[in-house]
Image 1 (tube, helix red, strand yellow):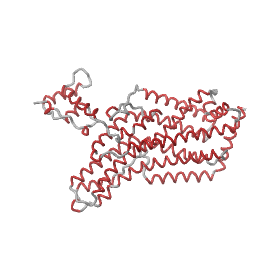
Image 2 (cartoon, helix red, strand yellow; image 1 turned 45 degrees about the horizontal axis):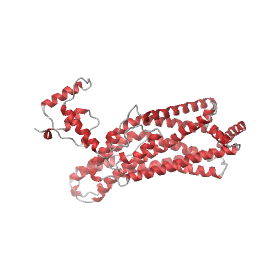
Image 3 (cartoon, rainbow, N blue to C red; image 1 turned 60 degrees about the vertical axis):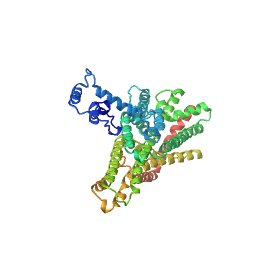
Image 4 (cartoon, one colour; image 1 turned 180 degrees about the vertical axis):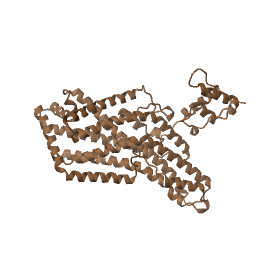
Length: 478
């Protein structure tokens, strides 16, 4: 009997990534002889002892599998290739330390504990730990203020994010392989048109706005320093760094090199938070587009008499997307919780800052831009994530329109699944991101604003205290 009749390469979509080596190949191949089964039993008993050679059948099937996987070139609109620019920028900020993000398919993705990107991430984790410890020591000595609390929330959240993304980097190859299998399973639907271009445009817009946001924040601090110390450029930047890094330079002597280094780390942290929101938006957008493809196909057959097999295939496709939504939710839910918590806190902090008198019209413009950008980014994340839930409910209208003569068990099961399942991303199951969730956030912000207006005198007292501290810095420098 020829090798062609004995060995057949199994199709990629049938691969189960949770199973172990030889048992998976055996179930997918046509080898059923007693000799092969006896070899499999012997291998399963000794596979971890490394004292026997693997059967030639296993090696041939393994080589076929790897050859098939590595020869696949993903479409340019597949998620693996479309999201590459974002992942490259995230790794510049020390996030998601995974190798192989620029390869032609997901089989090259790997997490390596000894990679340079992981060392880079650990350095940023160490700098975050130092900042958090200094802030906590300052809180212990000087008490709690809303400015110091804001620094603690920012740097503490940054520390959690970097540790979390090291953990998520270990899961990223498996998650992307599942996505690639789904794309192959839905190959007849095609790939979302222009997805790569849209992701690049979104990345450019967010990158531009976040750059303007950070430059505006720096310029606002420099203008305050100019108002306080008009003696020269060196003293202006010295006062700016002393005011911004008061927690650090309270315990060590001022150094321009240390100040610039910490400012670079701060810029990386700020970009990291923007990239996290953009990652949530892009993954939600990609999943929404796959639901849209299924819904568009169902809308074209609305009210038509179709065989039971059609509804079974459609239901199985919906099951694949539902399962992938749950997998992505498990992967992203901690990130979503931190993202919404971080954005909501700093929206409230900006509202508190709005009660302080502003020195110049430029400071007013910067405040309006920063607040608008922060609120707009939060709303954008909410809308894109909520669209998953919206699209997952759309098959219900088509299923209610199925003619009576073709209404069967598959249609009933499909309808029950669409009606009963609540597919959406969550924040560690504390909340589900739907359109009604946006109203909850808006109500929280409005309530906080009313409380601030009520206690405006308290906020003014805090402002006077901060002005006194700033004047002390000015007197010290002058």
